[in-house]
Length: 284
Picture 1 (cartoon, rainbow, N blue to C red):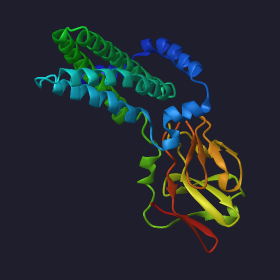
Picture 2: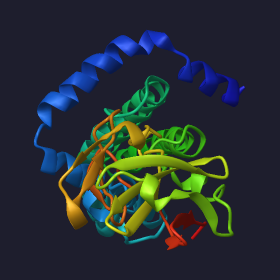
Picture 3: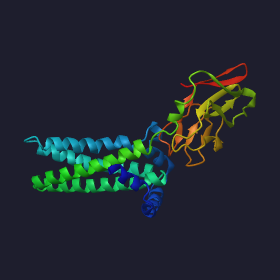
Picture 4: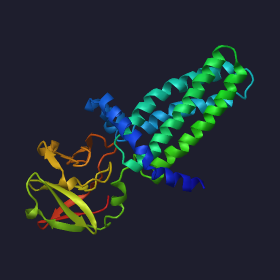
């Protein structure tokens, strides 16, 4: 029944109106690209939201344990305060990631965020109750908050692990690249300082030639599997980058480094060599 409910949530088109309104609001509120890159985790090569979530989650769970320990009320109250404050940056990063997701993921993400907002309100109430001497009420509100946060965590896990929100959509392609060196075309057939798409087995590979040197990346964008082969090349030489035509994620062609988001993961790079004028790649 739970899985069926989640499936219905994924297909709940009734949420799309609110989702589009909130998405536009998030995009309008957080415009600077450098700030968006920071919140996406682009500069770290890993989404930032899951990292920031560890602080409130750890604080709330630790407070629940300390609530069972005699004489630990002050420490538990401190942790509730830390956890409640730490929700803010984690939520901001989460909203920015959410704003760049597909509709089905945004539906689940919207309920995930709403659930966490309720949990945060309960913890804020718990903090106020504790600070005003109503310890029993504070503990009860914290238990309720942890329960609601658990439901939110379940939805967050579904969003990440079942729907693929925030994961590298290029990573599964790497496992499909042949382990042995595989010819993908001749060096002479590759345009100078332009991208070209060839296949290693049945996996599209993005090739970029600079003189007699060639770099090879998985062609599907790590953010949402967009076709990088259809993207524009900006810059030149060692600093040349390809821009995903779907959402604008930008990757350095020499090493796959994510230069701009919304991608929070670098683009996978394949080993490449030129033998007898033929370009070969293999699985790392």
